[in-house]
Amino acid sequence: MNSVEKALLKVGNLSIGFSQYFKGTQKRVIRPITDMHVEIGEGEIVAVVGASGSGKSLLAHAVLGILPGNAICSGSIVYRGEELTEKRKAQLRGREISFIPQSVNYLDPLMRVGRFVQIGMNKNTALAEQEKLFAQYGLKKSDGRLFPFELSGGMLRRVMFATSVRQGVKLVIADEPTPGIHPQALSDILRQLKQFALDGAGVMFITHDIMSALEIADRVAVIKDGATVEISDAAAFEGKGERLKTEYAQRLWRALPQNDFDSEYKGRAAGEQWR
Ligand SMILES: Nc1ncnc2c1ncn2[C@@H]1O[C@H](COP(=O)(O)OP(=O)(O)OP(=O)(O)O)[C@@H](O)[C@H]1O
Ligand code: NI
Image (tube, rainbow, N blue to C red; front, side, top):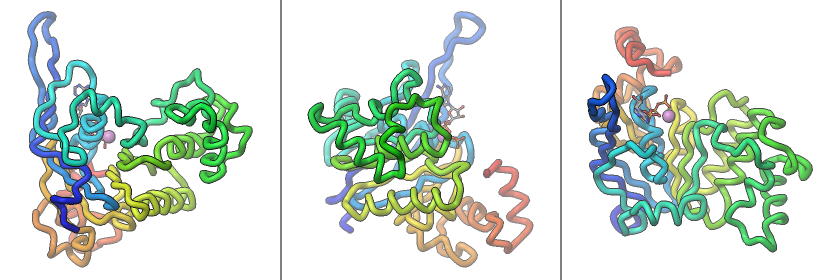
């Protein structure tokens, strides 16, 4: 792939801080993201991996334009060759750029889930389109009448997929779409994301689960303490990780239970709170 020509999303030198009040009136800025970059091409799946708190969700929220009001964001986010302004983010969000959030709490608790999936669709065809999506994601027609609290966690995730992974979407940002999901549902989700990429969409797949990521990802971005430390081909995650560029990525790889190489690496990586 010619990455420059075909880049769908290009995030460079992203920095995110939050202004906070402390001791009543004094203001300070904390800066959890200092230097993040990632590039996703058309039809490409880029996994974003890193320890809890490293800044993966903030990256997703920055691209989507849903950071909280006290966030101060700098750097560049270019989508299809044009800077993504806040206005453009709002226009594209839920349409060309879709989001599978980390928490199902993003669903409106007072809205029937069928209605939720219909948001942004043409009024005349919305119901038919929603029902088709439900069928595709293994949900019944009658489930559309339910409120979020009436659905199981797995069903809610499928509703989120029906909302996000559908026609017209060019970039999917999936923030940990697979935790606590049983193996069959997991492989369904991975298959759907893969199919989506094969159809030409770009996918940012944020996950703790490197092994699942490697099943579908073309490249993997490794995040540490708010910075991108390495972007490598998924194929480089093999053997003892000799082809990985940084020691940090090698440690993450070697610390996986199935890579039972070296207890010294394991001990050190465990200290990184890798889940
Ligand atoms: N609104 C906020 N105000 C201040 N700090 C924040 C805010 N949101 C996130 N942070 C901090 O930014 C850092 C990165 O958070 P983020 O949610 O992006 O991590 P993550 O990599 O997605 O973690 P996890 O894997 O647990 O979901 C954390 O240290 C977090 O405390
Ligand atoms: Ni997160």
